[in-house]
Image (tube, rainbow, N blue to C red; front, side):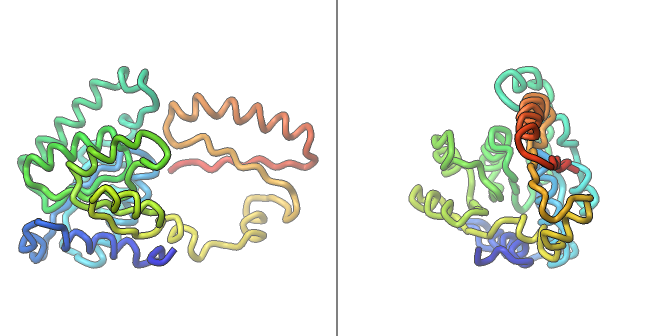
Length: 259
């Protein structure tokens, strides 16, 4: 996937230095200030890798925002824990409305007070696009790393992204053309999971490490990282696995766990 090697995270942040119409002199100091929002477990994982790479490149860089334990370990000043913000569906949005409003106020106040050099968003589109609107009104450059999958659903969000985001960093190569057709500055930086699996054990070694035979059929259940996703999807997946197990001899079922 081209840039999807160990340096893709550093390359992606180098885009911050080339934001169209941004005051470049703000990025030439030693201590670049980044505000980052990662509202879900996957964003915490990928954001932490990004922050580590950025701090390796520019040790004085200061990062604050919304995230989880992995971002905190990477050196980010976590203003709000993201565990209470990840929601699924309109019913959860309503039940978590107070938490979401409070989080948006914290972000808005932080941006206005601290005026960071850039706002970096990771997935979590409904909340992040509201934060992007606030940043845009303050003249803060906005970078969207791992944007919403507009090619799959809710394509109308492209208009909001075009108005509120200065640069989109995509993880799939075909996404680049989608944003480019809309006149949105975009850079393909590769998928972060390529780095995550680099140097990991091969298929047989991985199977042995978790007690699976090399030739047994394996079914992976992936209900998601949000609590409500797991509550809704996991029982159905378990029932499907049970039925498959009755028909497939020696079927092994594995479930990865979000950090």
